[in-house]
Each structure stands twice: as C-alpha cells, then as structure tokens.
Length: 113
Image (cartoon, rainbow, N blue to C red; front, side, top):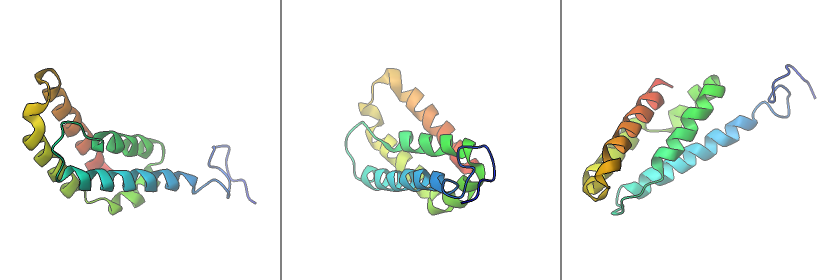
C-alpha cells in the first residue's frame, strides 16, 4: 500500500472510492430521467441527483470530468423541461419559478463540467 498525500483519498486503497459515488449519481440521474419521460406527477427526483453530482464535481473535478461523459446532458435537460411543461401548471405558483431557476442553474453547472 502506498500513501501519496494527506487527503482522505490520498492512498492506493481510497483514491478511486469517489468514483463509486459518481457512478451512483450517474445511475440515479439516468433512472430519474427515464422515469421523468412519462411521469404525470408534480414531484421529481432528477434535480437532487444532478445537485449531488455537481457538488461532488467541486471536490473531485478531474474525476467528474471523466465521469460526466456517461451522461447525455442535452437529453436529460430536454426531458426535464418537457416534464416541466407537462406538469408545471400543477406545481404551486409560489414554487414554479424557483424550480425552473434551480433547474437552469443546475443544468448550467452540469454543462460546465
């Protein structure tokens, strides 16, 4: 075993462990996006999974750069906005604009990875 830094992931046993979390986030994003294609409910899990991916990418930018290629970002964005158009009128007006703004911010951050 080799230790190469003081960081939590700074040894041979732990250096690739963050990839497991990226893989889980990617899987959750893909599953949520697939479900959202036909969902008729006003709730959705997609944005929180994107938020987690973006959050992790700030700590591990190089790993995020390599993993983000597994996501079809334009399709995910299109699916979300299609769902939003379909379900948006069912969302309380007090939250509707904020949800859209939150999605815009997250998709912009995801595109920058």
